[in-house]
Image (tube, rainbow, N blue to C red):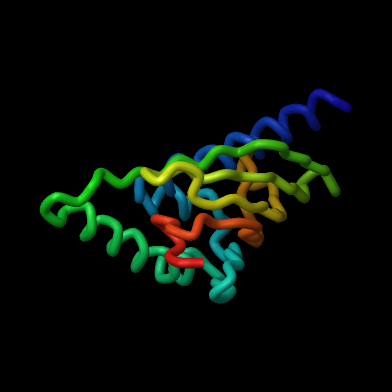
Length: 149
């Protein structure tokens, strides 16, 4: 592995952490900045292309959770995405594929778990998500985020 490849892998891991940190806090602008302008987010409920389409797909959930949190007596909602095993394969000097397992903690405990299947591209010295497929492998019956299984 060359020093350039090592730096690329670390930059990709940084982008992954920004996506999760910003998403956990409901800061969509920061999350959207991890995608290319024409990036794709593939969820079980559809495929969303471009930052504004991704915002449209995620905003209702963020808004709903904020509303629930403001309700009197509602427990404090938090999200914590934990990235585990990650494999990053550089496919060229400016592209990479990655497979990363994740687990999500909420007030119920382990809420759901799955896999990110990503394509990254180098952009202005950093690495952005060109395509992310979110595959949910398991969810709790009382998931605070995904609803009933």
